[in-house]
Image 1 (tube, helix red, strand yellow):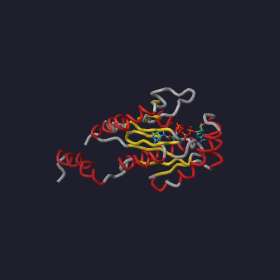
Image 2: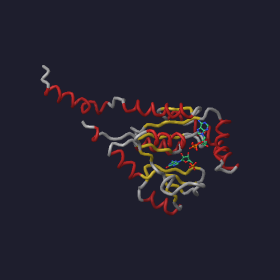
Image 3: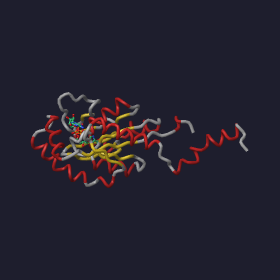
Image 4: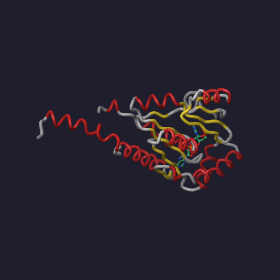
Length: 213
Ligand code: ADP
Ligand code: 5GP
């Protein structure tokens, strides 16, 4: 089987708000030949965010219409706003053999794993809750109330780590990026029992060509 016929892998990166998912995903995109899915959200754009790059910003009506049309691979209500992964792009890229990364919340990750059991779930942990708070405050994009809401949610989200395949502690950013890339590489070397026959086809063909007895 040639690589062109091989499906891409779906990597799902999640973890508490402020833990560094966005920073890690940005680096993954710069350093690897991968696709990052752009989500749709009803949250208001933050300063500097661009429609179609950071998110597809939508009204609740538009979002609910897409739900009704079955247009999401998964969606969730996160901190009072809808967030969802548009299905078409992800399916198309995976079919083309491209790896796709989703950066989504914990509920969404668990739902996506139900739809795509072969997806790889990676949980990004902060080195401590104190550092998590410092990062959210340092990012300067949330009000005090929103920061407290996100922090109080963090431990609850971490309790779902048993549903994940891997975790990465984001202490030193460069180490966290390398560890995430190592997981992605290792997943490409995983033996998929159902694919073994096809995997060995080219060797069987070659055996005939070079006539090994
Ligand atoms: P998330 O996407 O998980 O909400 P971000 O990637 O936006 O988190 O990171 C939150 C803040 O923490 C940002 O200001 C980012 O620059 C900073 N940050 C991310 N990783 C690290 C790290 N390893 N050490 C210090 N600061 C970090
Ligand atoms: P933020 O408002 O900080 O951009 O994102 C808030 C949370 O929503 C983060 O945990 C982020 O990972 C999550 N999120 C972003 N896009 C999606 C999505 O498409 N689906 C789900 N379930 N969560 C998402």
